[in-house]
Length: 385
Image (cartoon, rainbow, N blue to C red; front, side, top):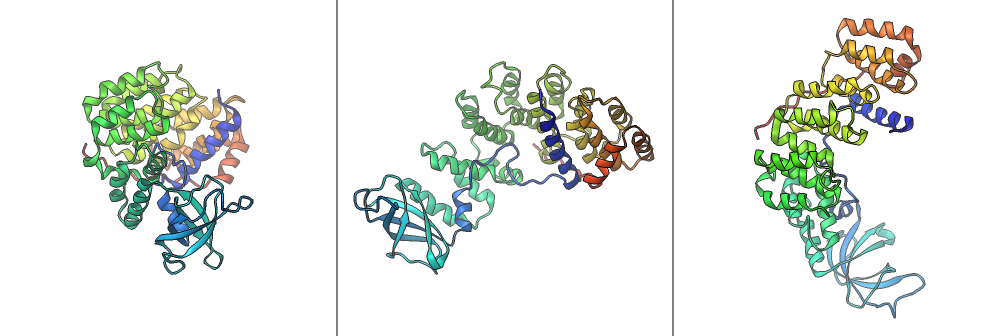
């Protein structure tokens, strides 16, 4: 059960997307944990590799200050140089000769942040510096090799690079993806949901219909570990199954009124991905699946903006009725219903708004006051799989 506050927040976010249109800014089902090393370097005045000249015994225990010697300048050669001694603050374990990545800001009084390095991570750092100006897909070929690295810092950084890369760029490395390795990672019950989402996204790019039995088994599983990352799992299944896979998703999550809110929302997110970036299933088929949600008044507000964005004007009467039938338990559906009708170019939509304004003028006024006229998005061209 969701709270009214949660539903209002979700509604605002979805309606905001309707107005502005979808933005392909990152991997569709992955969330970066933190700024990547490459991104951090971009905003720094200087980045260097330095060696500690003091240990825990000789550094300033009160301030954490420790003297270091710059060995390699990765960025900011106009501010610092190799061989220069600097002072940084570091409260972790320090040993004389230990190597660090120092990131500095304010050249007039350089303030350094410290990141301990191993020989492996130092080479990694040097490589990403060389790749900084390359195309995103070319960089991904490097990061791909570190996704499951035993060094957690490198593995996390590689994941964050993928998570912050647009889907169309990730698609470009299809030939480099190792299908069997991805399947092994996906089937690992200990795999974290965020990683699993990424690997399912990658499998959708390099997999084929032979993967469908495995994916369908996961969709129907009662094991929590099998169904983690459900939005990406559904999206992967639909990417490989195409339109023929929609009846399975409808039956399990969209048409099924016993499906949980979380599961249904995951399915909506997957359908939304396919309507905006997937390029595999026609929107005319996707909206048919979303129509099932209109039979669930407590969830209908989640998909009404998608129907408007994808120019499905076949549901004027149903959406008008949802407005009229709304009560205190689901009256949040009224604003998105009005916005759908505002976006619709058909005269009967304008007539419906006039009728609804007599029933609930406040909802109509809120829709007109807080939301611009929704702009339907352009069609996504299908690509060959």
